[in-house]
Image (cartoon, rainbow, N blue to C red):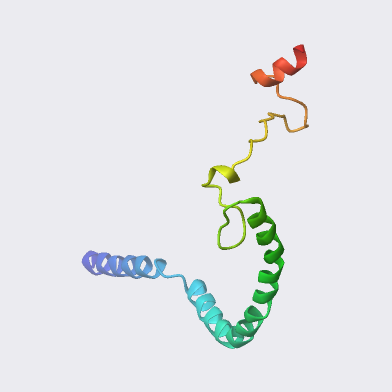
Length: 115
């Protein structure tokens, strides 16, 4: 009798462990997303083609301005920071506390107070 009880207990434990690895709720969500994506895919494709030309026209004045100043640009029109002419002087580092006051643990803040 003990052997049968232990065998049934082992069987129940194995079934519990094997079902614990799969999440039924996540499987249902994936199935729902897959059907949602299929339904909305054509509408999303038409929306994506419309704004793209508008974004290019907005970047065109920036590229003309940067080309006139001799800056090298990336494909999206922003300055390429790998080149020396695009690297301006870095803004001075200002260490502040959460309330906006200077953090006096840093040397540059101590010097400002003395001078």
